[in-house]
Length: 240
Ligand SMILES: Nc1ncnc2c1ncn2[C@@H]1O[C@H](COP(=O)(O)OP(=O)(O)OP(=O)(O)O)[C@@H](O)[C@H]1O
Ligand SMILES: [Mg+2]
Image 1: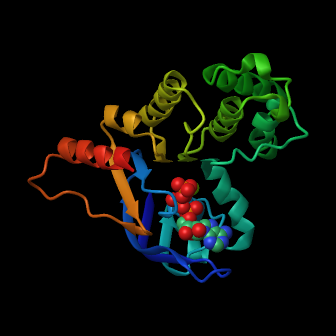
Image 2 (image 1 turned 90 degrees about the horizontal axis):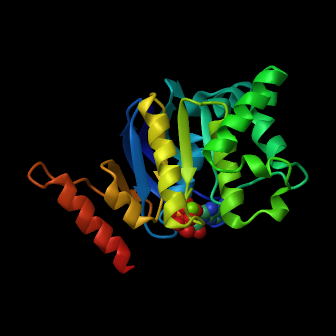
């Protein structure tokens, strides 16, 4: 579903390498967490998958397509296959919650009645149906984050990338949002979730991809129990 082959990324402004020689495979229907300290390259990696930026070196396949060879006219189609939840929400300030969430469906040409039904269904799931007519500026950080989550999920894309989706949420809401992701995963959606939320990762039996200074850290050897590894890694994270 998603395959990185020797991918590196440096930003022209600084020349600094944000990702170095990434080899990574995420199977269709897999749900994984992406962790690492601030600046490790998590957002950069997600942006490459969403084709918001391009690798400096290496190959990246998403949904059977080599993104290096994706013609510009196919980028909008690619982005519709990938629901992205951004670290900074990126809501449109002059549109209501309803309008922000409905936008992907409007762009995809979905019928008006279906849009209404689907927008309210997803707003209910994130607990924000009563805020449908509010503007982003009047929402709390956590509410804005949940609008961003609703917008990414409303079109039921086959791939969902989430960048710190629970960063502004209290533990109970965070668990609700993770349950929503798991629900999507059980119907076959592939998810990659960047998070610092050690306590949540601890409770979920999912693959953890750990980035350190732009490199994927090796997964434990055959003899290591993955549970132990995840716990000790979570403890390591908690100390920082
Ligand atoms: N647009 C940019 N121009 C120049 N350098 C950038 C840009 N975006 C990110 N970087 C650099 O690339 C590195 C990785 O950044 P990235 O945002 O991917 O980290 P992150 O793991 O998402 O961090 P955080 O947990 O703080 O969100 C950092 O050193 C950052 O300064
Ligand atoms: Mg980030």
